[in-house]
Amino acid sequence: MPFIEIAKKRFSCRSYLQKTVEKEKLMQIMEAARIAPSACNVQPWYFFVISR
Image 1 (cartoon, helix red, strand yellow):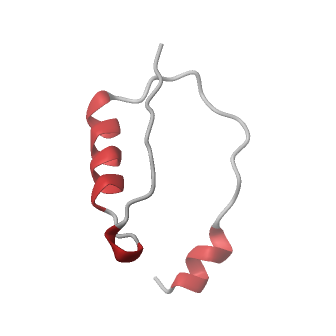
Image 2 (cartoon, rainbow, N blue to C red):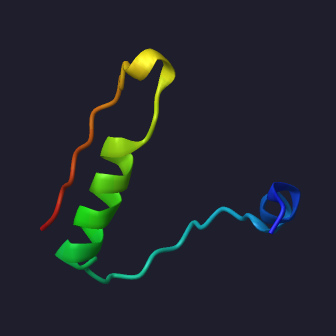
């Protein structure tokens, strides 16, 4: 799908379910973020996972 089509279908979600995200899914998301490229491989980000 071309990027323009993806951009046209995006939306902002302002209501969330009271449902816990599975640990396996969180780990996949964190791994994808960890290996994502950054300018000059600086990786200037921090990640926090807060759960109850």
